[in-house]
Length: 531
Figure 1 (tube, rainbow, N blue to C red):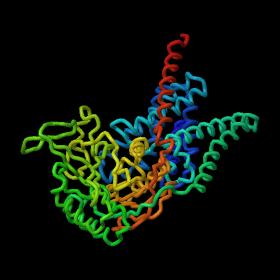
Figure 2 (figure 1 turned 90 degrees about the horizontal axis):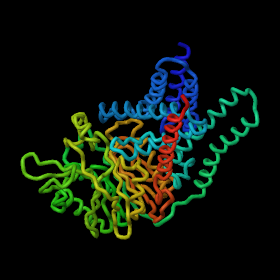
Figure 3 (figure 1 turned 90 degrees about the vertical axis):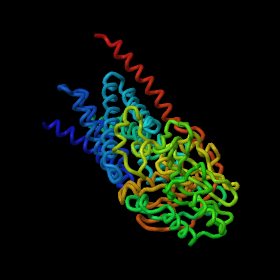
């Protein structure tokens, strides 16, 4: 009974430390010690002789990750209770399984190889979470430093996976150090060596980053933007009021601060909710309204989110659905549009879709769950996407139109930069989550993208945090929650391509290769073990 209480306490402590470290809950430094109780728990279980040992250990792991997932992402229930339960329960299972695999492998591999197994398999799991149809990388460990841009200026070389590697390596070293101190009860040469290595691993990246942070200055040419936060209640207005009314509100707000020097006016995700047919863009009444508005601002581009549709005579795409009362098919998109007096209308379709909300993952398996998806406008089925990360060109300016959830996918965003994006526009609607940590976490994650690509960011949220970020990840001007607002700001455009922009998630790819090799070695050890 005492041992059971001990193990539950250790699992609970790790879960609480991870939660307390997450933006914007509190103490980021807890990330460096959060896994130590769990590592201690796993180490104790190696010598434990009991029935159903693996199931008990899995239960402890699951408790830890269930606490972390629930405390940091409970706010999903505001948009979909079923989706929140599935995300929290399933993500906790995946994480617990990684640690159970580590336990099984560590018993048969050398000590160092066992901990390498944990690192590479965890990072491979995070990489999978960025790229499969059940994607949910919100709790990738490297995201935990989002509110501390002073610590992670080196993300321009490594991306988020560098942060995940840092956290795991420090936790393992500190655990080994603590275990050595307790077992030897003195400061031996090995303890001193481990202490010095641990301190160096923690503080050298931070010192390097702080120096770079203080020396760094935004590069490029100034761009004048106007950011609109219309503050439309998505549950009571967005799909009951008319799109024309919402557009009129946005244009009226923009007109109060826009002038002849304004390069861009940026409105949030699905600011045009009525639905614009791409086959007939220029006859849409809301498009005509925007064009008429822009005549007073001849050098300004208007970037906005919209629900758009495209009709086909035959089923041209996997996501196309049939019209109910007539022949033909159509795709529905969550889109970004750019209009101006001098450029053709440009459109981008959101392509990293929220599982269970905008896309049914693996529909042949999970299609029966479609009825539990959040109602975001009365649509059913998956939204359409596009393969390329096309940038919006306005004169000589090139901007990446990033829609909501896409903003946390580093390697995905690098596609915009490789295609010439000089700055990043994030349009989002964080009102679905209510006044919870969700919208704060989402805004904080934009700091990571600014550092990874050294791009200025302009962020327009329907409500939540509309803001601009400089190229070292600082959030500058920003709005408050649940306030109708608009402001003008200056950002900078540049053609910089960072190491991470050029090479993407190379750390995760290396870890995936190492995980495969370690798994083969593990099976070899099992097969050749003497009976």
